[in-house]
Amino acid sequence: MFKIARMNFKRDLRENIVTPGHRQLANRIVMDIERGELLKDDLLPLIPELCKIYGISLSEFFITSYHLEDLGVLNYRGSKLYNIRDTDIGKPMRFMIFCGEGVPELLIKYDGALICLSKVLIADYFIHYNDPKLVKKLLKKHEAEYDKVVYLNDYQLLL
Image (cartoon, rainbow, N blue to C red; front, side, top):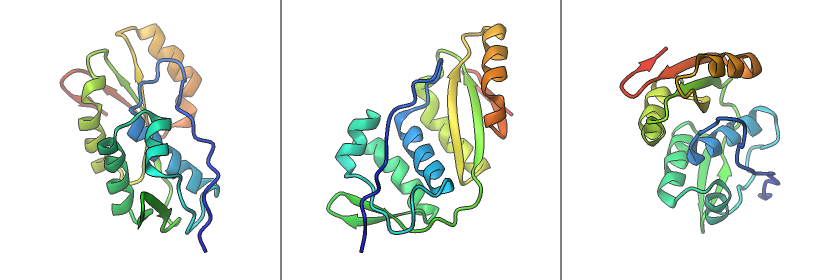
């Protein structure tokens, strides 16, 4: 018997965060599994509901679902439903990523590169506006939450 997961989904509205909706959804599912809030066989809300909550298109949703299916986390149940297939995913690597103003439209490309570094990851993107004081402030406030800090400019990934 499957139960529908009672997930209090909401977009991340932290200061300067520009994490794409599909990555926020993947982050949320991985964090909820890690905290024990999502259990094996739990059903996620319907796909259209998840897309509406995260402001993502169906194609962006499928980027998330294909990745989490490859990890063995999600299983498609038909009728627009997914369930949690497995909760033994290991400890996710957490990335704090700083990017310039011109980078957000390229985040899906960078997201794919990060998946090569760590299959199970949580990534949050922050705009730095080429302002060293802002970077220091955000690092001071959030760095302890992450395993790795990454800097992006318009052309390269700096680890």
